[in-house]
Length: 412
Image (cartoon, rainbow, N blue to C red; front, side, top):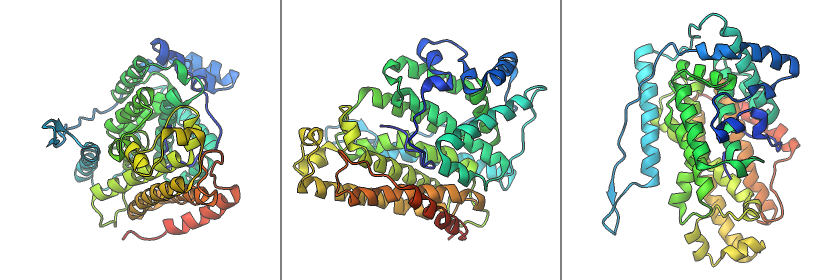
């Protein structure tokens, strides 16, 4: 279970990592994956002729990020620990500070294309176009919402979406059994190279270009990879503190990646930190919703993404979940979990209005549609073992104009 994008309501179509042309390179440690699998034969041949030019692609500027130490607390045993909320809070503050620093030095964020080397501009355009095609194919509702954004913001969001999708497919795709911790280490090293302006393929290049234009910090990207590592080694969560950190890793990070691109409304009176906290809350809410929807599917894989201490207090065992027992105990437990998820959605709403006007529609659409999944779980009498809660196409179509209407409201 991973990657409930805080901005994406995708279709049920699965993407094979091999289709991204990067699984073998990450698994085996080779340098340049076969990105030509993304294209038709003619287009692939054209790109293969140009591939050597990626080595000349370079960043026009270098971002340097301050390191903020997390607060330490003493637990009852006398050991120094950091709570999950504190860990996440530190990342939020770091990203917010990065945005405010750029706004102070450049005024209202005005994105301009960087100067690129001769011959690379057409390649970058192809890279962004392909990111848009992937987003349109696998996240139709979200892609439609991006049509209102400025071209630069639109392309950047597509690039972020594709990187997140590729990362998620490492451990949640059909070839996940081949992925090892060392493979994720190589993927993280590749990310660091990307942020230094040395992408491995055209899809990496789109993101490498994006992070030169927007104040995007690398930490949320690294944290998402950490979430993938968690999936390799962990199938139970002792309490909500552990689960919260996991939800941040695989979904809350997407909000932190995206807010710098989507932008904050010029007339917003909210603090930068509060907008980032709302984006984080939407990611947490979406991931909790995914977890509640997919209990049966995850159980068949031997995984339980529910707080073990809360299950114990409700009188529910792992065996009850594996057996798919829908009892009154289970219904009461699910009611409390749904209530928690809705609390995060409520928190997220506070920040959507503060985003730039053109960026609100896809976020509102995501929020409204994901929240409806919780309604469907209730409609299924809390049977999330054998019934999959989903929002019908008709309800999705009805939600889009509602989301658009909300996107027109002014910041609070």
